[in-house]
Image 1: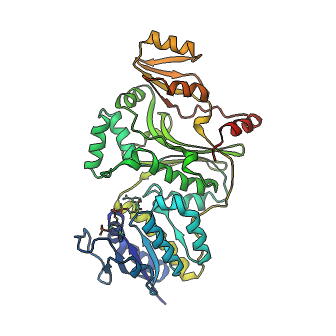
Image 2 (image 1 turned 30 degrees about the vertical axis):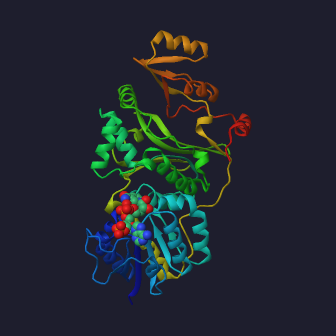
Image 3 (image 1 turned 60 degrees about the vertical axis):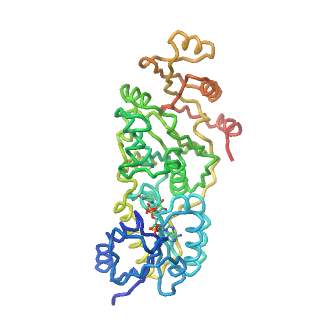
Length: 426
Ligand SMILES: NC(=O)c1ccc[n+]([C@@H]2O[C@H](COP(=O)([O-])OP(=O)(O)OC[C@H]3O[C@@H](n4cnc5c(N)ncnc54)[C@H](OP(=O)(O)O)[C@@H]3O)[C@@H](O)[C@H]2O)c1
């Protein structure tokens, strides 16, 4: 016997339109494999009169009332793809308290209020899935929760923002920061206000979600302390590329002994690491785990149909669970509370860029007990620097430094405790 499940959707923009485009195929698959007929009965938008890129299914009613969707007793499943923090949170809370399972692509909300919403979903015996919130089209969250369930993740390293990666790739290819940003906006990769992308905040939200699922750890923005790409120059990207590195906005979370280390910052990634080859708007997530070792997942981190595919796979799982009557779960991992330290607090090597005359720079280095190895004119590789030396360098005009991936000196376990008490955040 075929069961019918009514679905409501909030938002009909980039992702919502992709859901509509992919809807017929998803409906057919779900009907054939599960015997469930899906009906998208209501879609809420902000501007009812706005022309839409995609025709809605005949049974779908367009409304500008979120309540009409989340309080409709016939609707069992709500897809939230409108973005925003407060409005989306209120809508999801209302949907869950009305007993509906929820699928969302909203990383800002899941990063900041995910635990609260997951707890609510459990209390209300509803499901809450959010695969599309990190790395858009790459199915990384369910991979972490399902395929690494019996493994132990040791490190997650990601290129998680397509806009920032596009700009860095374009600068490496010769464009200035402003040219690269304008090109990204023209191509529809960057929003008119790209602040969250270039400041590292968007990447930080995604790392918060990955940290939750990879380590069961609630990372905070204060712990991650994002550094964006606005101070990276085209010359730095090109020098780095000519000498064996690609500068990438990296999200990093790594377990060492009983501690977790994290950071979001531009990092020089050796071209021998596959992650360095993730170019343009593509995303990449490298995972190191006890059983599997190294694995890398790459693909489109955004985009209408790729992101919609992640949303629709969540719909498939949620409908199966609705049919089985086993609701009350969310994408989540067993909670841990490891001490957290920012990676910047550990000794490591840096690429140093300077316009100072080599003799003046070497004199400065000798005074501050730094060892600098020339890489090219104006580019040096530093010896392993401690945080105090890094502070001195960062306070010096005419010098810019970018950490080099894979050079962190991990503290001995005993010394680790001392490092944590000095550097632990929150
Ligand atoms: N774009 C991507 O590639 C991508 C990738 C991964 C995750 N996401 C996430 O997916 C979500 C949606 O992103 P998007 O790019 O599709 O956004 P978008 O293109 O700006 O679309 C937002 C949609 O939400 C509707 N909306 C906004 N406020 C509303 C309100 N108060 N009531 C009812 N409808 C409202 C808008 O209605 P109108 O059309 O009438 O203005 C619009 O249809 C965000 O959380 C985003 O972070 C996006």
